[in-house]
Image 1 (cartoon, protein in one colour):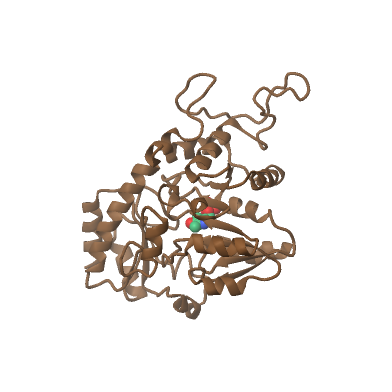
Image 2 (cartoon, rainbow, N blue to C red):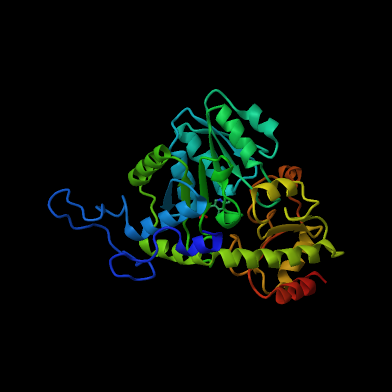
Length: 378
Ligand SMILES: *Cc1c(COP(=O)(O)O)cnc(C)c1O
């Protein structure tokens, strides 16, 4: 089955009981038993399993090519639940510019429970190798990253992880399973903030995880059922609906992005443009090998905070907001928004200039987006 078809026919198609083509929203907490322990379809209580959530979990399992899928109440709930596979005293190596919430939960919550972390530039294998300690249990990658779109070689890091008996975990939010399947490059666990492209319409907060072995599946289901950070049936249904159009949305997101990158790259008011689709981007070749597309996130430097402010005050179709991956184009200034908590010197070291603007390109008509950028930049 090809990718676009899989988005629609993957998992469980429709409803066995009624023939409904759309999976029904099973808004239910508990299930009638025919005698004690006599469960009809294996459903007992909806924290443990719910048919709508199960349909979504089967769908994400199929489109990531794994053994078992899980749906959580947010991307952070998914990441936290995966971390609960580890024990006090364990250590995990992370990509240094991971999502801010991931950094926060590791350095302010998990550390209190004895799970330690080190953050290194995972696009450099030497740095990863030297960060591995006696008690390291996993390497957690985000590729490409926010906002500089740094690319990590998933296969190379997975090989290094296997040599050292570590799990490889990949946050695949930015590029989506339509373009990139980390499990096929040796990763053990892939996860998503489904709030972004998978939902795609800025109307649901959710997280998804897929694992590549039955054992990991059992362990993560034990955590999911024990700690209970599940996704509800209504939101599960919204995600199934969102994923059906993931293929056409990603194609449109990416073709709009290519045009915008070309426009920005030759514009005299714009400095460096960060997009892995550009041949000049440091991660371009790696990305081409491991992903069928370059996605729709771009960052570019307009030179100063004032110029970024001017751009934001004039732009019409790019909504000033955090988040990404929705049908509407979004714009943000990392230094003042998502990365404001990082001291300026450290930010500049990381390459996040004061005038760096990040755009999540939507699927509006490209001519409107280009005209809007032109008028706002001039
Ligand atoms: C948004 C995001 C998260 C967190 O997901 P929520 O659904 O907001 O909890 C994790 N990783 C990445 C890359 C994200 O963009």
